[in-house]
Length: 101
Image 1 (tube, helix red, strand yellow):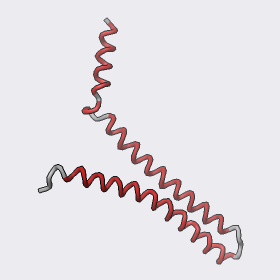
Image 2 (image 1 turned 90 degrees about the vertical axis):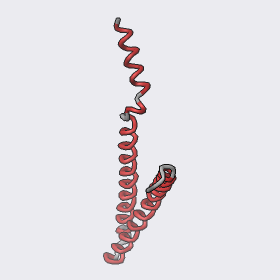
Image 3 (image 1 turned 90 degrees about the horizontal axis):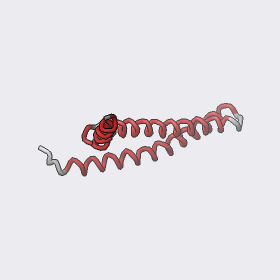
Image 4 (image 1 turned 135 degrees about the vertical axis):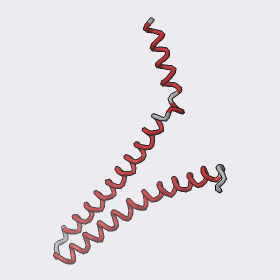
């Protein structure tokens, strides 16, 4: 059995690795895009095809950031709707009902 005290430590490591993986995925996406551009340049002989690969890589990096943002926003929205953290909202609703009378 796992000790409950060990779970938060593991969660911190997983969260840190997830944040690190975002940075690595941005760099890798741009590098793969540049490699595609160099491949296109050698295949076609045109210099401007390198920029196609660069734009593909930058687009992939932006998509990775957006996916990470959407995942984080979903997690925070679930946390906001958690009843353990709705203390303020419950008391604001009670005060609103008192103002009605």
